[in-house]
Length: 223
Image 1 (cartoon, rainbow, N blue to C red):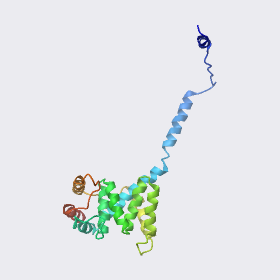
Image 2 (image 1 turned 45 degrees about the horizontal axis):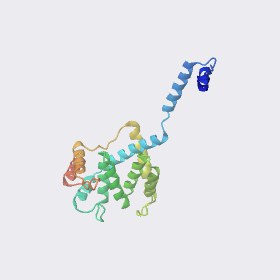
Image 3 (image 1 turned 90 degrees about the horizontal axis):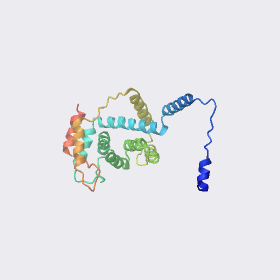
Image 4 (image 1 turned 30 degrees about the horizontal axis):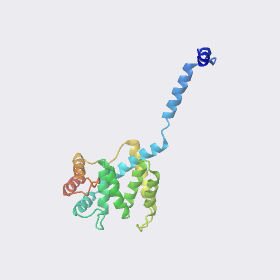
């Protein structure tokens, strides 16, 4: 037998017992701590979820505006024109972006919102603020909120009532689940999906709407 064998043979593991240790009580405390932790949602997650809800409310409002279909119509009239040319119908870009968002084409929605916001459209900038906030992208969200409140391209003063009204109504909708603005119909969603599947490999963004989608938008807003 080697010296190492001698050491191992005589080794003993010291076991210390804690007198009065209540295993059941400890497990109950662990369960209570876990329940308390789960009852306190992460503030960032709550803020992101609320931003997503406000964005959906706003998109539905914009989509249900009486002239929404007319703007999409104008956007569809020049199918070969670059999306970022000087003749872009800015309101049409906003409406189309909201439709894309509500039909789960979020990347394309961001692209069209950016086109409208770049032309000084405050509502598009606010949509981008909520969009980035819902993704937890705080820096981008702050940038677009700044564009809403301090956009030099818009000669009007920042409209604090506009933001306050949006917040109040969005809170009401979140609490009650009610909204008078309709969501896109299945037909509209199918048309957007059709446009999405026609994308080329070099472009992942849904391109401008065509006549078929514009006609369906007119049907939607006339309901």
